[in-house]
Image (cartoon, rainbow over all chains, first blue to last red; front, side, top):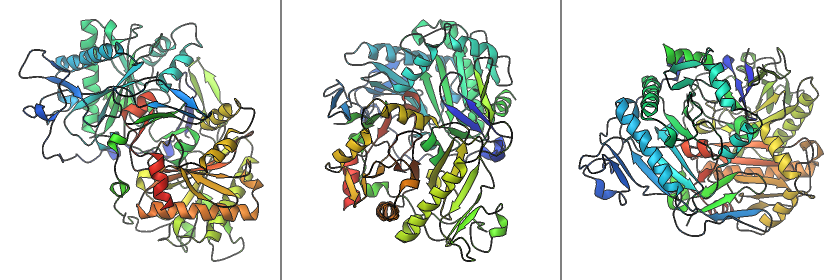
Length: 312
Length: 312
């Protein structure tokens, strides 16, 4: 029997349709071949990218992480950032903002899952630097950090990288979560973490982080990672917390690598009181007409089975 | 210069990123090959489907349209339809409902675009019959009707068909639209239609219907079709209106066929005062980490260019 489930706090529903279920190995995708001829994310092709913004280590010739503006940006720091409304129904601004690429490794063949934990921690620390620096700029209201891994997750560039896009507004998904949080006189995520670490949806845990498959998972193998402390932003992380997060992320990503699963990784932080977290969304299924029409999502895998896959 | 645009009435934003634009012919997909060995949507395989619900013409051996329950349903008319909440954060019911398949043609090779206008009108009339009949059933709060055309739109079955899924709740997207409509003391869509038929986003128009590419299009070539009258439901359509809708749909779908574009077609009606409409969403791009994280959508084609493609 399938189940209809609501997100913990959002008005977002999912149908867990076990009748349509596949076994985990049936989700396994074919390994992709590299299509690019010249990779401008690779060392010695640095001249092919827009002017570098930063690198790690900072004063090195041999960088491990490198940041530069996206050559084909979705937003640009040009034009008018003020959002205005004409004739009641036409609300717009220029697509104002900054769009950065964060290359995670000089090695063209390595994915984020292959990096050692210290390097992964450094990548996350770079997210923090880039978010903080961008939030200081005029007309930047928010900086979204995410990773697209593989074609089904929206990238055709093999060389492992994340992206940052700033907006001249707070994203709707952030506003929606913050509005839902405000309905409680405590942090709902602090309670949810305590419930889930004692449930069949628990995946990995260490002294500062917990990961679990969310009760109303939207994607097969969707998994969330939360700090145990009520931390709001990466800038509050201790050095140990960066490492603990990296350790859990590597475990998750190695499991997804075994499936050749394309995935999106979403860094989730708010503007007032949202508990920081990361959502990892494997892209093994397609949202079709039903999802687009209703807003309710059909997922063919139970989060309980997905958690078992991660733990074993 | 790209543009950030908001949906007419919803808090849904889109970035029109012309910097990343492709020409229409670059969106063209490869034609698909039929993969199935035996098609159980074909005539003489009727015994392979669950028990038939209806057909058109009603008392014919040679049907043109055939309706039966989905063999792999997302929802079933079993279990408890009441939605309940346990321990604050766990809201659920059984996945209760009815899931039907509406085969639009006996011909395995034909797509909806290939049918003549009278047959398309009959398909839409069948939507009406199935919606009305399902809404009478206990614990059915809404019936979502949609079409998935092609693999990128979420179907691997070639034989042309639509689907109906009922839910034991009003879908969130419907509630969101109705809430937005209530902010006006007039029908916002009636005004939008009048604006858009005089804009560069106008596509096709006849005496009872208007089609246009929406101002904040989420998909390249997204197009909406509205009755000119303030009609709420298919059951209010006149015979002439069914035909006029079929004529416009065929024009749109033939243009998409020329691109080999997979698409979703969404039948949109409300529960109180929403102006009936149809949304056609070609699936030529992928929502990636940015869209999932922020809720803001990047679209690489302007709706004005898309409308030109439809008109020419």
